[in-house]
Length: 326
Ligand code: GLV
Image 1 (cartoon, rainbow, N blue to C red):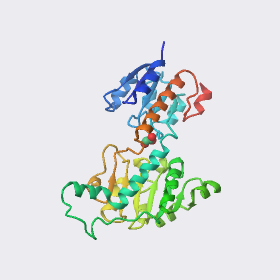
Image 2: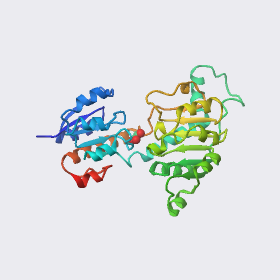
Image 3: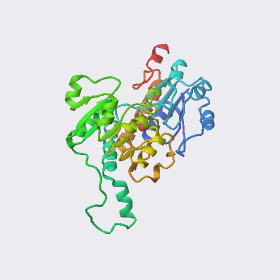
């Protein structure tokens, strides 16, 4: 008998075809997230699930589906899954690392430039027909070239952002729980500093830390107070890394100059007041959303799921401890 797999949201057809070759698949083609109750119902009797970061795979969900062998997330981040509980229950968890680094780093730059130069509000003015022609004092933004970029989290995406900063001839600072090797720092042209120094000295602060309890509200009111009044905050990591309420206050009261955000604390809802602010560029969690990259992520998640259910070690196993126990 073929193993049974639930696909919780729309993914690429070719990925579905791959899973369907080896498994019996039920796929949610409506692309509206299941409610927690629906998810529980749909998971009944499934050996594997291919899910998105909009699906919360909690200990309770795992406990109620003891037959589940693999949770394959179509994302590099997996904070939507209780990995500790999955490991305890010997359930494999997989993700899609590597394939989205460059696309996310590209988009981080899209946010940096849009936020620093006020592209979104200028676009809005132009579309509304309110622009009456060129003027010296109109739409003034902040330069990016030759400024100081502060990268929080020098992982694969943070490194990609640093590489791209070369073209803008920037001074690049970074902070991380673990300092990179000297050769890496040299290759990237980055300088390690503590978080306080980075926040004080950077013109652009960009966040690339994973979401863990220790990184929740990594940027809150005290950190925003440390930043320059002319600084821009960029977040293309996970929403809860920033205290969004504090950020709205900081932007309203001009503690900092602007923000470029791709992620939000309570997606899909923005914090009250956020969308009213002019000094922001706000994207709906699209940093990895290029055709090529999303296709790769979708195929990777499918391949992880198929491998795990065929008794092979999935290529992108997050909780490697589970493997020896199976
Ligand atoms: C997207 O946000 C991802 O984690 O892949």
